[in-house]
Length: 110
Length: 115
Figure 1 (tube, rainbow over the protein chains, first blue to last red):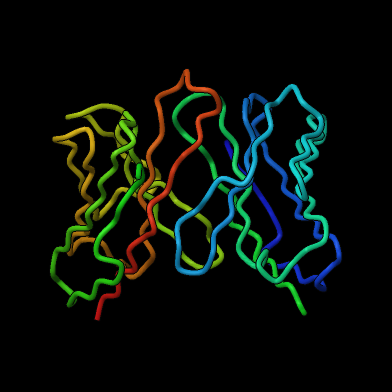
Figure 2 (spheres, one colour; figure 1 turned 45 degrees about the vertical axis):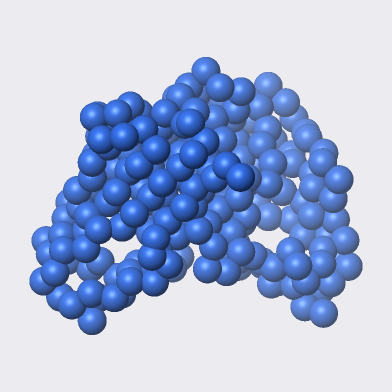
């Protein structure tokens, strides 16, 4: 069945790069996403990648997709304390339903 | 401003009572969703609706009910049959398949606590 897995915690120092990893099981996924959740708030789309792409860069964010291994990663360059949040990996096979991972809580130490 | 609103932000109820969570969107989206979020478990889909007067069960629908009488509104009722209702509830909406990348837009959430 469909499943998205990611580690639950990541801790980095301010100024370092953060890399959050995710694996998914549905090879027919059309879109893969990274959402960000601030404390006590809803999710907000950070970035997405189409399944025929290997990489997407958007300012400090770099998304890498390895379709063979069904592995998705999000790299945040020059991590700031304001990046502390929960990051959700998600997949969509082209329909209305999106499958979310459990979320990775990123701690940024000053 | 377009967006999704959920009310109230915090809700307390006594065991055995039904409670209804509100969700309204002015994005003109066809699809709406309800998720439940528990620590370390991510988002689990409760119900979704693709069109007015139609909705389907998600992965954890037992103890919940919904209605979709208007395109912009998708209220969720947590019934007394829900065994462990204390959680953070998120409402979302999206355009129907055929949109560019199927982004879901989320409301700010309602934290329900059963006393």
